[in-house]
Structures are given as C-alpha cells and as structure tokens.
Length: 213
Length: 142
Image 1 (cartoon, rainbow over the protein chains, first blue to last red):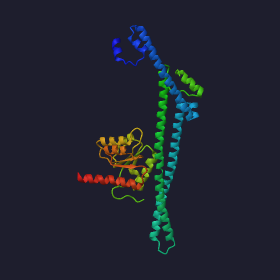
Image 2: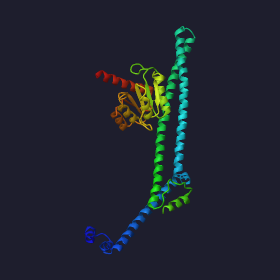
Image 3: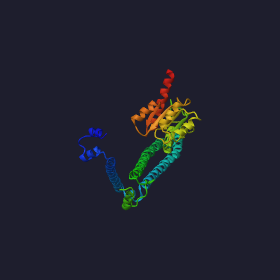
Image 4: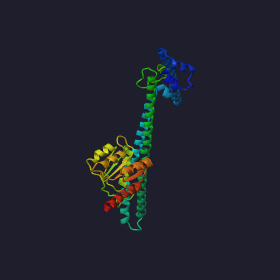
C-alpha cells in the first residue's frame, strides 16, 4: 500500500512527508497526519478571524451606530425609517389626490355654468366675456387637476425603490448574522442565535474572542 | 379631458390591481377622466385578492401592476389564463420598468397590453383602445 502511494505521489513532496508515507509505524503516521490537519485548521481559523475583524472594521467605518447598537438593531431601525418615509409620502400623495378629487366637480360645474350662460347671453351682453373667461378657467383647472393626479405617481415609483432598498438591507442583515453564526460554528464554539448588541470596539473584540479569534 | 368614444365603454367593468393605494387611486382617476363610471371600477391590492374578486364578479378588463407582494402581476396573469372563466379576460400590465425580459414574459403569458409608469390618461386610453381593437379584429376573424 505504501508502495502504491509512493508511486502515485509527486517527488516535489517534502522528504519528511515522503518518509512519513513510507513509514510502517501506524500510530506515528496518524499522529503526524493529525498534526498536519490541525495546522491547516489553525490557518483556516486565523483567516476567518481576520475576515471577521475586517468585517467588523468595515462596519465600524460605516457608522458609529453599527458598532454601538449592533447590526440587527441598526438594520431594523433603517427599515423602520424607510417605512416611515413610505407612510409620509403616501399621506402627502393622498392629500394631493383628496384636493384634486374635491376640486374636480367644482371645475366641471364651472364649465357647465359658463356654457349655459354663454348660450343664453346676447353678443353685446357684458356678462359674455366673463362667461368665456370662466369657461377657459374651468377647462384649464380640469386639465391642471388631472396633471396633478398623474404627478402623484412619484409616490408609487419612489415607494417601489424604497421597498427594494428595504429588502436589500434585510438580505445584508441575514448574511451578516449567518456569517457570525458560521464563524462561531467553525471555531467550535456555541453560535449565538442572533447577533448580540455590540457596545464598542472592546465588546466587539470580546465577542470575536468568544469564537476563538 | 374628453370622455372616450369608440372602444372604451363607460360601463366597462374594470379591476385595478396595485399594492400602492395611491397608484390605484391615480388609475381610478384617469379612468374616470376617460369617462368610465366610478361604480364600474373595483380595486385589489395584490394578485391573490384580485383572483378572489374575479371568482365572484365578472369584469371586462384587468389593469394590474407587475410588482406586488404575495402574488405578482405576472402570476395573476397566469392564474387568469389558467382559469376557464377568465382565460379570455383582457389584461393590461403596468410596470415601473421598461424591462425587455418582463415584456417577453408577459407576452408569453398572454398579456393584452403593456404600459410603463408613469403614464397619462391619453396613453392609458390608447392602450385600452388598442386591446379592444385587436380583440374585435380577432373575433371578426374567428
């Protein structure tokens, strides 16, 4: 069996490893193999630790709130702020729509009355120019109200973008929580269920230390 | 804003589907500007609620947004085409994006018209008229 491995392996392997593979001492072979595996694990954990620290540093740079209150809290707060913007914009758009809907019957009535006055008014009657002006104003108001209704589309268009940003924040939050959980599991420590609030660099370092970083 | 003539019947029953109440209100206002009776217009805030209404009430046209939670516009369109009683119901799809993939998917699912937000009453009228013109031609040819 050793011969088989020796033939299959490349001569670039270190002499110590080739000696080990050729060895007939089973326990020594296993012990050496364990040492290699542990060395590799340590390297992986060191890399993960560095990754977690880099991530924390990136979050710290993003804003003091992230570090002070924790990712979960900041993400939830960001979503609440976006919901509030959405609600306020809906209220503003609805107020404009209320106004347009309230004024439209008045504009329609003005147009009808002006037409009625124009029909029964003699050409030399001084009321005729006034009726014409009223008709023009009524028609222009109707058009302007229709334009104002249409302009409220901004609430729907901006709202859809806000929904997308909220969904993005949610996915970032999930990914960060998952990263914390995975790094904890890989370090062989009990993983936190959710990201605990971190009150500062010292707490962040303590949290990372719990995972062996 | 003149009331519509030709294809757009003022008694036409129209279901407006959008998760944003403001957009439903805007479309309702545009339709009223076009001469449709307010009582002929009903609203639903997603595809599921739209299907629930469609199972009980007969409509002449559905105007639906694409992006909605629970059941999107494209899924609503597919459900409409799958159900015997609604499979020929005209559907006008509304979207905020002029997205080629969306247009192709909607066309493959059997949409009758496609309009990009924001749109004017004149554009809406044109799209609705086009739908019923095409249906009249296909019925005449059948």
